[in-house]
Image 1 (tube, rainbow, N blue to C red):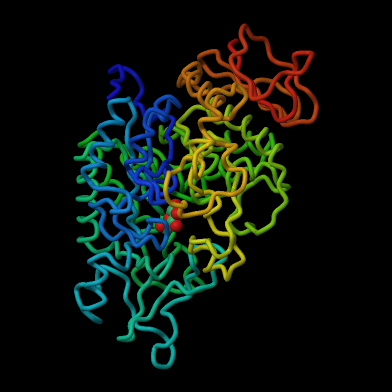
Image 2 (tube, rainbow, N blue to C red):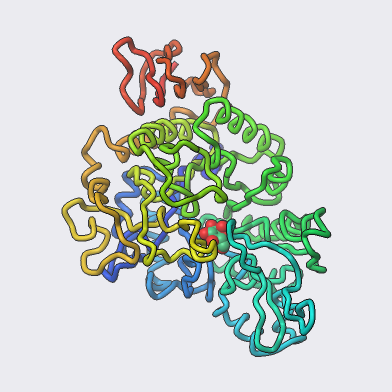
Length: 533
Ligand code: GLC
């Protein structure tokens, strides 16, 4: 494991963290599904890319009703992916290459195939087994109506968040019916999760991503949203902070770190999760959702830094993940922001434009103070894929009544070898999601030696990133539509989002650009450059 100097800032304050969606990363056994053998075989690629850590989306035993976010056993690897022994080898092998491992814990809900829920279903109304979940009688004549009016967490879905069992009781599930919500007021639920954290820290993981981190705690009365708007009955409740303080004590014993999936519009409420005795970091969804617009990006960056400063937590910078539209596609559309509510089939997209912007955005995010998350395939410039309707697996699609394309378009198995079957994802069987026409053109082997490729840009940028150090950011004077800042180390980043070429600030060296300067040495539209002052 790469050791940092004792006086150096902790690794996670400035890390580049690569998100591995195991099912689609690389297929080691050739059955069409990515697996741990595939990841182990590609560790040299990840080391060459230069990332500091890997975040694995859930790799546990799961019926895969929500891509693994329906966990049936938190202490075992899904047989489709491998074994626990292989995961331990993977963690160790990555560590030898200086790459740390982050696992994904899903505390809000379990799979309906989890032993606790199977027992609760069997045990019947009023049983201690059911107390681990949220079971309630229904409303209306014969209790035929759901216990309350909460909407689905899958934006666009009008399905109820309650399902009735044959014995008449209903259970709560903010996501699919196969993902019953746990009752976090129950001490056994807390105990179990602290044990799960220890289990993975004991196996050498350096950190834990916390799924749906702001949803765990519920108002015990489960009141209607219409009648109890404040405090919210299940989003961002104060009880959560007590839960995360005890998690922090567990993590501290192993020097482990947390990154929370906290989608909250209110910056002050968001920052509460990052107080020194709670989570170390949380994903920056405001930056991820921000349109390609200089003023809005600058505001997003300033707000982010300002909200983190009082609690002393580092910011994170995220352009995409396994839930959202791929960056090159999003930036190539009329609406360059991200919003679950506006996703639609057939949105016109200019991929060349989107790719140009995504290259500039890569240099922007890697130059900012904090840690950066990179989602597999982002370094290859993969676009969002259109999945044939009969092949879509993501529940978000069906639960929207077929209007939402779902999230499979960003989960397509990676192209590794341009000349190989299935673009080198796996040799024998067709991948679990179809790869679109032209996928091989994005293959890692084709990009590796191409100086103009997205992969080369990411490799160079990650290698040069230490130039920026960990000091603060200062905005430089610039014209409208241009973002220009200096870091304390003396490294500068300039991004031109305007249609007028921009003059560069004084510098001694040009370190890297996302596209060439014009003949007069100015920065063209949708281009970023790194300079040494
Ligand atoms: C998180 C995950 C998403 C999943 C949901 C329910 O938002 O990122 O993929 O569907 O939680 O677990």
